[in-house]
Length: 321
Ligand code: CP
Image (cartoon, rainbow, N blue to C red; front, side, top):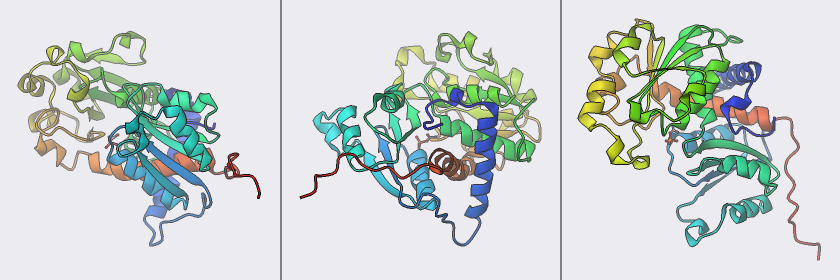
C-alpha cells in the first residue's frame, strides 16, 4: 500500500503487521540512541490545515527517529491565508521533493483528494480529515488496547468489548476506531445522546446504546470522546451539566467497570465535561500512554509505507545552465 487514508483500507493482517512493527519501534525508544537510519534521505512534510498538538508532534518525532528530513507546514502563517488552494500548496511541496505528506484538514475527503489527484508523487497519510477518519489514532488506540488487554504480539483484539462514548457525530476517531476494532475482532458499542449519533450508523459494524451505566460493567475498555463544541449547533446539544451527568465518566462510574478495564481518551480532554479530573489522572486512564504509543505507531506506518521505496526525485528541477 502507498497511502493510509482510512482505517477500513486495512485488512486484519495489515493492522496486526502495523501493531507488531510498532512494538519493534517501541523497543528502540527504550534505548539511549533512539534513532534508526531507515528513512535517511527521505523528506516527510507535515501539512496541517487544522490545529493539533499530539498528532503533529508525534508525526514529527516519529519521522525524526527514522532519520527522515521533516518539513512542518501550518496553514496559519502560510500563503493559504492569502487564498492559495490545496492544489497549489501540494504542487509547491512536490517541487521540494516530498516522499510523504501527512495531512490534517478540516474538510472530510481532503487526504483522498491529495492521494488521487496526481498533484504529488509520494505517499499520503491521513492525520485527521473533518468528521471522516483519523486512522493513525485508531492504530495507536488498538496498540494500547492490545498491550493492556492482550499482551501478545501477533494477536488481534478478538472478543474484547470496547465502548466508545460521547460525540460520535463529529468524531473521526470514533469512525476509524469502529472500522479498525471490528477488523481486529473486537465488539464495539457506541454510547451517545441521540442528537450526537450519526445518520446511517446502522450500517456501521457496532451496536448503539443510549445508556452508559448499562454497558460499563461489561467493557474491557471505555473510550471517552471530546465534545466538539466548535463543530456543533448549540441547539442540538444537551446542557454541559446534563451531558456530564448522563454521559460523563466520573469516579463512581469508573468503579463499576471490571478491575482490568481501562479508560481511554484520544485528547484533547474537556476535564469536567466528558471526564472528571479524578478519572483523567487515575492510573486506569491511558491518555498519556496513548500519546507515547502514537510515536511508535506512526514510525511503523511510515516505515511500512516508505521503507522499501526509492527516495522521491523532484521532476521540477531547473534546467542545466
Ligand atoms: N488525538 C488528536 O488527534 O489530538 P490532536 O488534535 O492534539 O492532534
